[in-house]
Amino acid sequence: MNEPVIYELSAPGREGVKLPHLDVPASDLPTELLREELPLPEVSEIDVVRHFLRLSQQNYAIDKGMYPLGSCTMKFNPKINEVTARLPGFTSIHPLQYTNTAQGALYLMYTVQEYLKEVGGFAGVTVQPAAGAQGELAGVLMMHKYHLDRGDTQRDTILVPDSAHGTNPATTSMSGLRVVQIPSDARGNVDLDALQSQICERVVGLMITNPNTLGLFEEQIEAVVKMIHDCGGLVYGDGANMNALMGVMRPGDVGIDVMHFNLHKTFSTPHGGGGPGCGPVGVAEHLVDYLPGPVVTIDLQLSEEDAPFFNFYQPAKSIGPLTGFWGHFGILVRAYTYMRMLGAEGMKEAAEHAVLNANYLRSQVKDVYKVSHDRLCKHEFVAEGHFDAAPDVRALDIAKRLIDHGVHPPTNYFPLIVPEALMIEPTETESKQSIDNYAAILRAIATEATDNPELLHAAPHNTPVRRLDEVSAARDPILRYQHA
Ligand SMILES: Cc1ncc(COP(=O)(O)O)c(C=O)c1O
Image 1 (tube, rainbow, N blue to C red):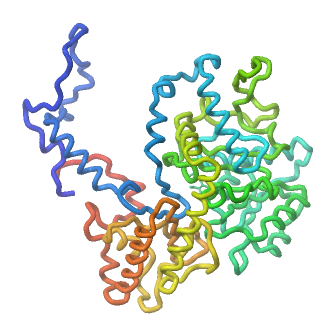
Image 2 (image 1 turned 30 degrees about the vertical axis):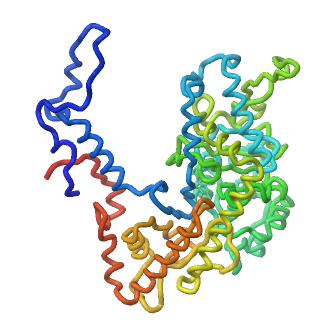
């Protein structure tokens, strides 16, 4: 980075804040906090503002432009969510407060549970898990405990289609269970013959991502569920992709026994980076007692007519808590706000637009980029980032070149079952103009790939850092700026 950073702007005596008059006795700062080798910068207010604005502009964000990361769903988070999350009544609340002094907060949690029950078609919901993957862990542990309680102790295997999200097999392994992978058929659905060949009394259940990571709806979902139920197993639905289905199809109605939602992918909460987010889990009746608690319920003993009293309870056979206290409440405020702003019709429209936008973009590029399993997709589609006429160009080159064109690359090299995968999810909030712009850029890059492949190999050209060694950047990050 060649631009000046704040320490170089420091000049003795320059100051950027005026502190209020002291209304307490003056005392020195603890000397152990003031280290000679780490001097505090002396800067003016404008130096500070420019420094942080410059840094923020070096980053890319959905607030700047299209960010079509398939599977990671960079959904636009309406700013009203932040207004409600900052209401003093929510921010000043303490987890150890008596529940009779926090009825508004409990009502909000209860209502989120109820809305998610309705959206997913489930009998019970917990908002405990801190992320989607933690919701998966909860679900698999519940499924296993359910079998153990029935004396079905030989069950130790989870079947996972190869089009599942990577967290599904990882969760299974973390739960101490065996993963058996099921291949997809030519249309991108679970291969029913391959599934049948693995059905046995060792099956705890199947974990199915629907729509799957190819962006495709499992066309034979009812047959798949029946095969698993017929052998006594349970079906885990990875509901992270509910952005394509909410208001249109309820997984509980086709027999999914347990499913997590990703509030950041569907209900416009910030990405948690593994937490502190929220991955609520919904279950059918036979698993309600296994939910991780506490769950919010209406306490009939303390309720009065027309005045329900909300309280926490631990389900009878619960697998136990997953997060401290009551989960990540601020996230629930944002999801609640989003659901109330949209209403039932609005949620359905959001899903329909997410699907429409993905299909529109797919139709705009599919004559240039090979599209895996070319059929109507849901909220995302997977293109292949390679061209016959430019054999050295790879998905990575295309992704980096997109940055030069001022937009964010899609997810790449995932799912693993598509060569040179570019997984594109525009989301529902992009306009036709911005999708057309993205399509035009993708098409221009395809032309560049044959005309001037070096341009792609050397991309990105205008970023503060160029092409990084991503492995060492992750393993050996340089986190502190040091002037050369
Ligand atoms: C399909 C799918 N399943 C599971 C997850 C894991 O969720 P999280 O990142 O919240 O742990 C994701 C991540 O976005 C996902 O896209």
